[in-house]
Length: 177
Image (cartoon, rainbow, N blue to C red):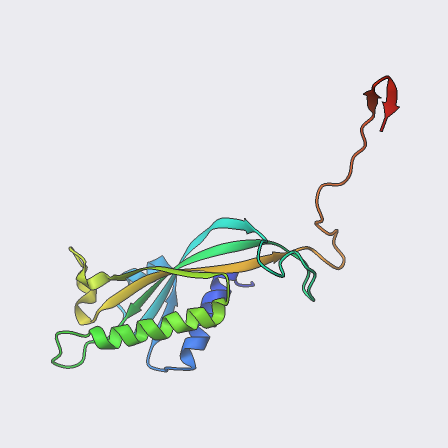
């Protein structure tokens, strides 16, 4: 079975991240946050596509090899970067921040535009932080990645809008169409 677009995007980010570092593991989905896994781990949690925008960027609405861009789905993700604590070091912020920055760059590489980032949070520094973070620090951030929806082409009816319709009536005593 084919993976959903949200999974494909996460896979592309993890693949890009692996080109700059090999010391991490990755996981997908909110359930993965509950697992007691080793540090140097990135978990991608899909939030959904709360916004579907009209195509309004330069070049949108024009035909490409794939088709004409009709809409842009704004997929929101939450990324959790779990860094490792060095032996004897009570502060492990450095390794966590490097993993976070590398992940941010990988998301940017895959996401192109439109792309937005928000909400950087040091999870283990929040009140009531869970004991799962005791072996390292966790930085979470959100990203929104725009994915175009193309007009259907080849073998299917093009989605070009509402079909024309004809009405007739009388205007100033004359029949109008």
